[in-house]
Length: 477
Image (cartoon, rainbow, N blue to C red; front, top):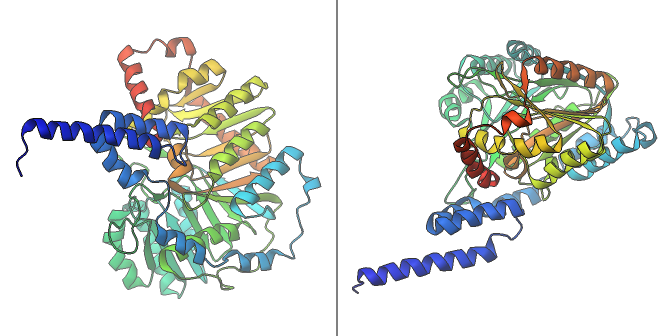
């Protein structure tokens, strides 16, 4: 059959308009207005490209195999719950009403209750963090569980590999999960070595286009978790990689080392991820030992990600911002907020709350950096104080609310972390820990420049235009 150029042109034009009209109906379904607008904008200008990308990464539902796996997920918290049922209950009367509301919200979102008897140590010096983790692995007796987005076989990563090899040689059960995208190089290069040493290594969020495990390629397991013998846990912003792994950039991090019953919550999140990827249920007494009281700090964990029906971390952050009475300090490397988050911050300012946003002056991702800066003017006009950190690339991810609540974990303050990434967040209710975090925030300020609205508005027009374009695409970043 012969088609002349005119016929082909009409077919292409008609096809483009069919795609545009169809996507107007399909795209807004179960999607935020900002994300829907970004997709529709892309489809309007590039219908065929937009359709291809939407079919690849645009569908909000998880694939059937993963939904089925979640249904089969054994109650990995049963063992934890059984061992904690005799622990003293944390009475709601012991908590201020606004904190009790956050506790209840977190419990309902992540199904992990607040627990007492914890000790929390804030670590910020890069080498010291690795030293402590290696020391704890070297002291392990039963099992070591490691889950990281970035695990790179450089000097830092190899220190952890060598510590795991020493542990495995002693008969310690070592299990490692690495994100299939972030750690794809390590999965290939370290896989044979770890296997030979008796270390169990699996990829998290492997992308498959065919067969049973089809998974959309933009999903990530962005968590950073290490648990040793169910007694010591680590989480925070730091990956297992050298601080200067990107040329011209030095990363600065914040990690917490925890002991006490809350460690078993980190263990439960690892065990859930392990089951999803391997079908193996980790519910033995070696994995979930009897909890020990190690301090007087109240804490609880909140897992979040596309496997949950709700935007767990986003809902918690918004609720905490609305609960603040004096001060909110947000430290994050990536700030691409959605509308509820912006409204919560603006409302807090109107209630008389000091709102501080600590961000890096430079960015390690150009489009994200442009999109992030597009929000500064609106926030400054609303009364949010923006501080740009200039010493290193500040990759730390934490929030402090007034003088008694700290949020520390792997989650950025962006739509990707809310919708596409599996994240882990620990909420700490303790004035001493909050004071120690406050000291770190004060240190940040000494290396920051605080933005002035007038000067910010004087930046070149071409820069403002680039930021505006990036902002249109920010729900897709």
